[in-house]
Image 1 (cartoon, one colour):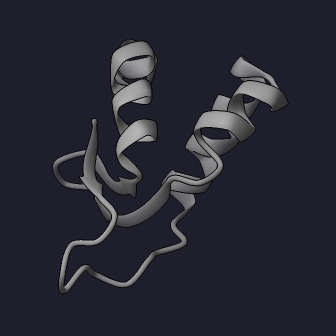
Image 2 (cartoon, helix red, strand yellow; image 1 turned 120 degrees about the vertical axis):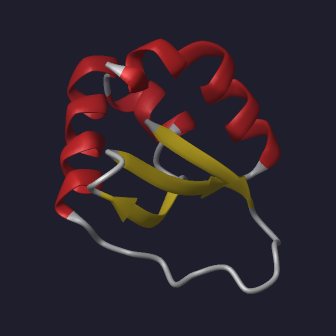
Length: 78
């Protein structure tokens, strides 16, 4: 599951590079193609990976967050 927060919140955790996030980005780029990936997923940043809960916490701008939530939730939850 992907947990989303918006940019601009105080005291946000440092961004992480995590294998689970990197693997997800690779799969998304392969499935969606470079144009869609670059438009909607490239700017999303991973803030935390909770392997116990199987969650990736991310932050993104409001428009990106809304678009990805509306159109890609099912894909991300698979």
